[in-house]
Amino acid sequence: MKSKFPLLIILIGLIVMGIGVWQIIDVKVQTAASVEEAKKLVEEKPIKTDKNTDETAPQPSFGDTVGLLVIPKLKSELAIIEGTDPDDLAKGVGHYKGSYFPGDNGQIVLSGHRDTVFRRLGELKIGDSLQVKMPYGNFTYEITDTKIVKSDDTSIITLQNQKEELIVTTCYPFRYVGNAPKRYIIYAKQKSS
Image (cartoon, rainbow, N blue to C red; front, side, top):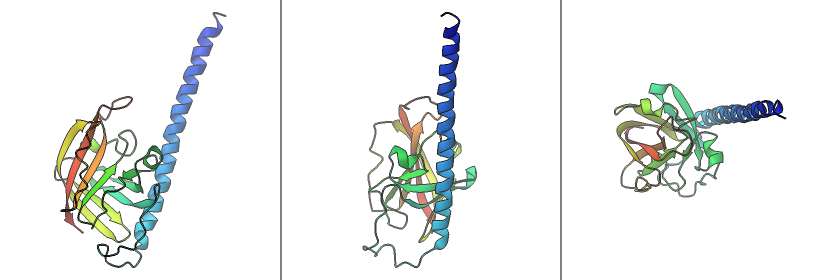
């Protein structure tokens, strides 16, 4: 019995590592597929009426790819997925349902996991650019501020519609193992469209 216990521990360790590796590969495959779908979506450029006056346009469903987030400094292209539940965030950056879209003159809220799509988000500084590519146009935002808040602080999501504002959120600290106690917030204002 004594000689089998170490083998059992090694076997359990290998199983846990295998599950971890499988999850990493699965997320990479899903995000790569979503990025390709987003690129096709924004390249098609369908003819559309003025975004601000088209009330009849169908709203995206949870899990739909709606656009592409480009972070030039990080050389990163990330699919924007409607919704922020775990399945949506496994595919890319989540668009907070109820927040506005670029061109709507309101608060746009995008969220992502710190250990997948936003692994290097902490490298961005004030003045860096974020680009949001949508089927109806491209929008460039400049980072104006960053902030760290408690994980249960929802005060940053105001859903205001007085001015165009991009909010990007992820868990913090970036290298924390488990459920992170804080959130890292990036504020950006529109530069051009």
